[in-house]
Image (cartoon, rainbow, N blue to C red; front, side, top):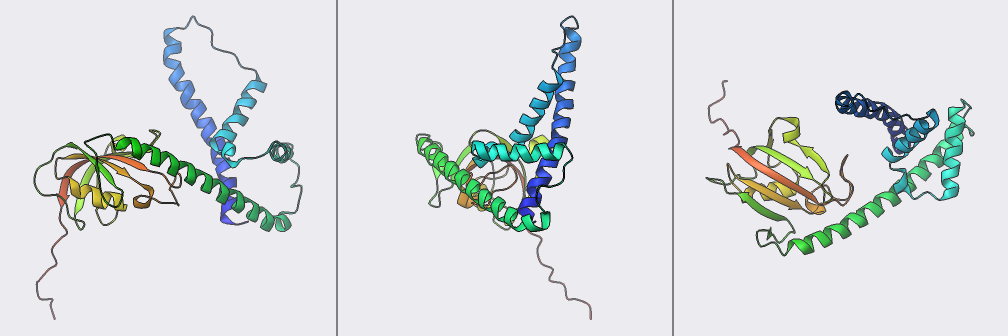
Length: 257
């Protein structure tokens, strides 16, 4: 099987682990209020209900709804899952079915990514149309938009500089996909090593400033996306520019013979 099929299988394994971890986290969060209200009886769930919830969780976390399976296709998937639960052998020889499985997964993934891309581009067009009403937002010729949230002082960084920043990146729906604030540590990175939207956008502010960047897909991660960033996503960053460091000057000393 190719990497796409193996990745799908591994994701299913990871989801089952994540389900257990999320369940423990939810129980820990609930323990505090439960202790305060010890008199209230804990909700009771049957084993059947718990298994149903586990099945929902696996399907939700693997994004099965996005694949557009028909009822008959969903029934076939359930049949295969039931066979595995009952410790039955694969209904077909892996060596023989593998190439067809790879082609099937690749085809469905391609269709899924195209659907996600088209939806994200449509949402971005509507979002940017509304953004035009904000007089504080500047639109550049290549489609990048930015808004100065706090003025800095001194010169702006150059594309060859290294910047120290705190930032939060979100999708149009508000989902946070990356944040140095959540990690608790600023990031140091060269402006020639980031997405084009950052390289261009951070040159519009200066040390001590804060800027919001509205990055269209072609200046971000494009059609490929990244983990947590679907294909064709418009990205919104709030960036505090903490410091600017120019590249180290090349040594002019005569090397020893």
